[in-house]
Amino acid sequence: MYKSKNIAVVVPAFNEEKLIFKVLSSVPDFVDILVVVDDKSTDLTAKVVKDFLKRPVVLIEHEENQGVGGAIESGYRKAFSLGADIAVVMAGDAQMDPRDIDNLLEPLINNKADYVKGNRLSLKLFINNGMPKVRLIGNILLTLITKISSGYWNLVDSQCGYTAISRKAFRRIEHDKLYKRYGFPNDILAKLNVYDLRVKDVRVKSIYGEAESGINIFSFAFNVSILLLRLFVWRIWKKYLFKKPIFVE
Image 1 (cartoon, one colour):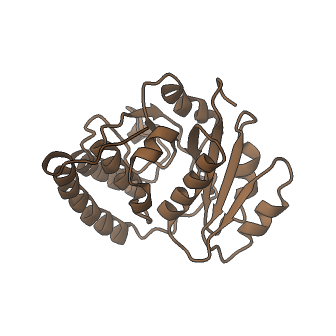
Image 2 (spheres, one colour):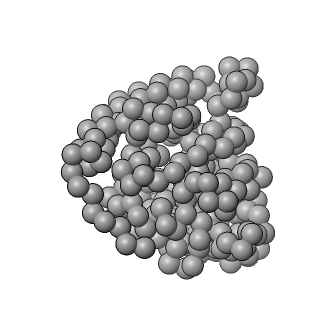
């Protein structure tokens, strides 16, 4: 428990047998619920999780690969069904510093945000960010386009997956229709905006070490760009031209 709130950490994992133990071991003691979603891995990820005995872990095993967005949505649903007030996403590749969880939680605890996302880009981004340069340039471009598509003009580092969401925000958005693949961070921002939910950036560290990205940067950029165009049109239609359904707490 963190400041009287039940905290869950959701770990989406696909073929992370080498790093998942390290990730689970790093989760702070104040986290009440730890959920790992094995997205139909072809390695021993699920076995490593089952053999992890340091603390209780809820393991969800997808029968079919759904993509990182699908894994996160499954983890959210399980975490909130178990009583979590806030759910934090930590990837299974050990690229998120657990010491930053407090920073993600504070705006939610203090009722200054409904969704908090990490920002790995700073004034020193070209000198000491640590992010591979191709990813850095792509991230900056996607961030600019995401500002337009999502309507959150003050946000930076749109592709950062280190996030925290409140139970209220998750219940309010159409979470069953969230994009299931790598465009998930962009998609959820548009959905949050449609329901006038507050989103805040907080500084988090970049960790690039053992994990290797399996993303084809060119196909990823193309697919996400198409998604962002669709999200812009959808957001304008849903928020300004189509009457939204009334949400009941």
